[in-house]
Figure (cartoon, helix red, strand yellow):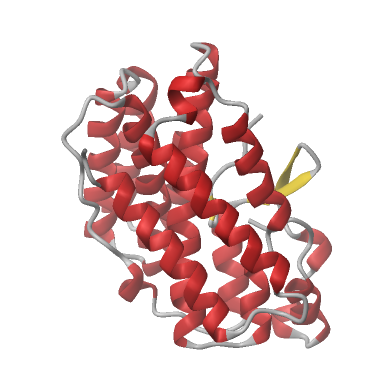
Length: 274
């Protein structure tokens, strides 16, 4: 099993993720914020790393404030490439973008992302497995059925990762997860930066998950590990890890901004074709 992205933020993101039940969750509970139960925080355990469901990370942020998610939606710059590593990273990025659009309840953005999912799945040779999810996303968007859309985005990414693993493309499956986590983390850092608080910033305390991604790249085959984008992500993740390890007393606003800058740079790299 591989982590979802933001992700997750976000995973998941990620892209869309917490290394443990974060202190921010416990603090939200103790302060009586909408009776949030930290023990009920849903997620997957992957190699002893807790990886939350992407939409639930957004939910925690919502409980700690009222982010303007519409401001966080971005139009993805779809690269014209046959590079499967790039396409896999991009797939994770786009699915994480879908979660942002759902949080914003932006019907047209969700439809656009659903069509991008179809295009990327076609380029990856996975359209047969993905088409039912993509069509369900488009149909649910017409009805503003946000719960169903979240479910289908989760299932879309899972289906792609499972299909890749069945075809022995585990490295590409990890790329999907990393692309989603980077997009999710960029969105979270943006939200936190606009209304900084120690509680919100604690959501970024994910060293075990970052280490998991670093180790995953270390274990990749030479062709994937030395791919220029994957190599840059590896360097960026190590920089993010250093920021997390240095935040002994919690993240500062500058620290959040620095992590955001690293993620944004890597997302730009993913969308560029060299």
